[in-house]
Amino acid sequence: MILYFSATGNTEFVSKKLASYLNDDCINLLDRIKGHDYSEIYSEKPFVICAPIYVCELPRFFASYIKNVILTGSRDVYFVLTSGGYTGIGGVLAKKMIRNKGMNFKGYDELKMPRNYIASDTYSELTEDEIIRRITDSEGRIPKIAEKIRNGSPLKARHVWLFELLITLPFNPIWCRFGHGVKKFYAGDKCIGCQKCAKLCPLNIIHIENRKPVWNGSSCAHCMSCIQNCPTEAIEYGNITQKKKRYVFRKYKT
Image: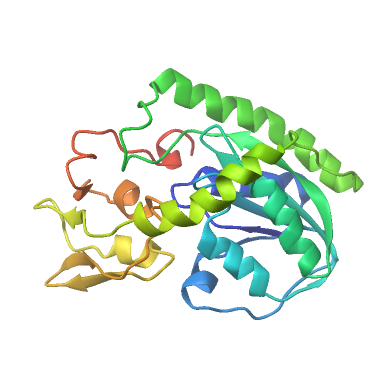
């Protein structure tokens, strides 16, 4: 069973490809996460959990969901992580999480996909050639990952060093608390009131008032789902995102 969350399509693509190679079912966890639905998910085959990486870790809302959801049947769990280039300590925390659930952690692998985070000027925008190269390279690695899972072999990504844990463990919660504000989000005149942003928000912090989205709450995952999936590119984050290219996977692969 493939379980995933995807904001702009990278992880969804990987998940569906894996499901195809493994002849397995694939579940988008978005509605379950939004509805706080932790009811049983049963699978005779190993669970393969696919997730993006935010700030060097699994998204906090996603990690919380996996900790609490009831997984029955197979006791083996694999992770496949997507990132813009660095998965940080995501795999280490996934291992701890799964072992705490009394299940067998079968390792993880990581795929470098196009970045979707545009609410910062820290990263330069990727060229079209680089976007396509990352997608192509990752697609080429998926069959090998699927083969290992099919054979019951462990997945082995890079070694995570102690200094990475020492830096990330205190930094991530601070950044998520103070760097993931919602006040700068707004919808401009191009907004058509389609409500797509509210439907895609995993934390349910987007509400529609007078046919326009309003961001409420103290926490935001900065998953970029709202801003990147807006069909008219009406959503901005302060002045940072203005004139920046939007990214969703479907523009590059059908």
